[in-house]
Image (cartoon, rainbow, N blue to C red; front, side):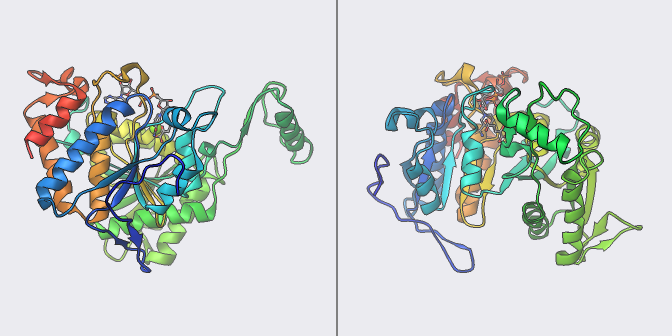
Length: 412
Ligand SMILES: NC(=O)C1=CN([C@@H]2O[C@H](COP(=O)(O)OP(=O)(O)OC[C@H]3O[C@@H](n4cnc5c(N)ncnc54)[C@H](OP(=O)(O)O)[C@@H]3O)[C@@H](O)[C@H]2O)C=CC1
Ligand SMILES: O=C(O)CCC(=O)C(=O)O
Ligand SMILES: [Mg+2]
């Protein structure tokens, strides 16, 4: 029994079968977190669009029983005190298996650590899956955005992003620096008196499980290559380890064979496993994006790459994503709370709508998912778009966040 979470009046739990597949009832209960900032604008629109697509696809036989769960500013309002991420939210998301969230605020300095990162760590959502594809007619800063068709697998629980760090001047940082200098022989800390220190944990297990998912995805979806993106020339044991363990895994578990003396290798079905250094990758995705397909990378690289690739196909207003463990799935937009637009019914709801589209595919509700992509494509083709696209499109009709949702529904 929950304290503040209201169970919907109808609906059943999604359950997990012994083979890890989902058992999805016709009225699944789906927990959702509204989100801070523009979450109040985009999340209700997403729900309306999803409900309309499901109704259109299944004529009332299927529907989603939405269940609001709380995190961020709304959780503090509902639960009081300093309760940014109530235990029962984490418990409900785990119990109901599939959920969706709006963006949550993380103050840039001081204050609490990221609730988004906390959710990923608490639920062991180790894959951040962010497909990047082009919709015809979307304004783009590059000449051939249709060549961008990549699927990012970002490690979601480790790396410098895990938040293991100590503030400059603190007793803790003094201890760490004394240990590094005194016991580990470290001489490279340029300003030891005033340094903050961050730690970058990258493990064999964490890297292998992420890269395994990326390779399996490439196999299951007939993709051409998997690229390990890293900065292993500089961070040899962490980023370099990720690359090395990735190639070893491809050879050991997937039968990859080295090409031209390695390290690139090829799976028996022809999929190429390759690697590229992260800075070179960031210029190559602008110059030769068609050479990249499935991307496997560490947490921070994946964060930067997500927004950079999203920009090539129209921006983070339509960049979807999923956070996945071996059992739980939480879908979320790639963008943040865009606080300057909060509550104005202004921003593009496309990112969270396409995240919901991924969620419907995850449930096996492919017909409803197809209706969502087709209706978004039609709304964009009609140049009925939110401000972010309208400002770059000739002859566009600029509409609000909710009107974009209505424009999609009208085209289903
Ligand atoms: N997963 C999550 O919950 C995430 C949370 N955050 C958090 O969000 C907060 C704000 O972060 P910030 O760095 O400003 O990044 P945001 O992604 O929130 O916003 C950056 C810019 O992206 C554009 N943008 C964002 N959302 C949309 C949208 N729906 N439609 C169209 N354009 C959009 C806007 O560009 P323009 O100004 O050009 O209109 C906006 O100013 C921070 O607290 C951050 O930590 C950040 C990322 C992910
Ligand atoms: O948690 C945050 O505040 C930022 C997260 C983020 O940028 C992302 O996951 O892409
Ligand atoms: Mg980000």
